Every structure is written in structure tokens, then in C-alpha cells.
Length: 237
Image (cartoon, rainbow, N blue to C red; front, side, top):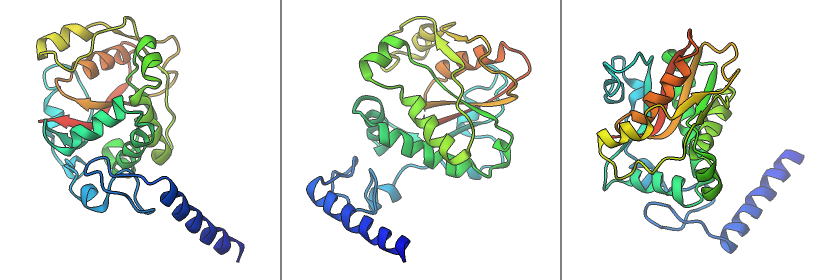
């Protein structure tokens, strides 16, 4: 009886809160009901999912790293194109205090990878670090938020294993060659950063040229016997 009463009270209080402080879909700006978080039913249904978790062979994301380094698996939840809804999601996470959205996208990723055979031996998550200056100005690291959401579902620890050696310019408007040079050698592995972990999943918000994830992976692999897989909210196409 008590749990039922508590559930009913929560339903009423959530309804009152939504009336006083309405939330809106980040894509279409329609007001959300209490069952929705961040997206209305229609916009969530129309998200540009990759469905990479259903692939038995390689994916577009895997191909990005061919001939560069030995990555075990690469997963992205959504396709990113300049005019699709994924752009609004990434922009909100990165620049609009989208902390809750970042964790929610991480949970969505975690749900899809939870029982996937390619990821069953992952024993740690490593978010791509931002330089302390950028984290201070923004107030958070979006990759860490995404990793927190994944950790909640996968029940895998997050490691503070990497750091950026310099404060770099934004990658947003750079060419493939400029992105590569901008992050080349800019990641380092912290002392005792990996401990006894054998297969780690490096987490970031978006995969474009792969330069950031490549050099972060190289830093992790510098320790020796460790397998590296990658996961991002989106991949550009």
C-alpha cells in the first residue's frame, strides 16, 4: 500500500512541477509531458539511429580507423549531418548546460551495448578529457557526462586515466589535416591510470575525422597489453 501511495504522490507532484516549470523538446520545442525527457515522442522516434549494435560486420565508424591503429570495436548511437536533429543534440550537450541530456544519451548507448557480445569484456570507461581551462569555462566535461550515463547502465567503472598536455583550439571549423595536427601527441596517460584493466571503452561526444580518439587511444595503448574500443553519441557522414 505504501509504495502505491508514494507512486501516486510522485505522479501528482511531477504533474504540478511540469505545470509550473514546463520542459520543451530540444528539437521541435513542443512542451513535454511528464513521461518524456528532452524529446517528444515524435522527435525521439525520428532520431537518426545508426543501429550499429545490430551489425555483425564492420561499420562506417570502424572504417575510419582502418590502417591507423588496432581498435577492437567502434560504436556510435546516431548519425550526424549538418542539418539533422543530431546537430541540436550535440550542441545542447556541449554548449547549453546539457548535463542531463549528456547522461541520458549515455544511458541510451549503454542500453544498446549492455548485452552485446563485442563489448561483454569491457572493464572500464575512459572519457576523453578536456583541458582544465576549457572545463572551468564550460563548467563540465561532456564526455564524462556521457560516460556517467553509460556507467549507470553497464555497471562499469569510469577511469580518470588520461589528461590533455596543452590547451588546444576548438576542432569545430578545422580541416581533417588541421584536426590531426591540433591533437597530435596532446594526450598522456596518468601514472597508474589503467591499473589492471584489459579492455577499455573510450567515450566521446562525436566522431568526425577520428583524430582525437586516435591519439587518446595511442596514449592508452602506450601502457602495453590493453584492448581499446570506442563509443560516441554520433558519427559524421
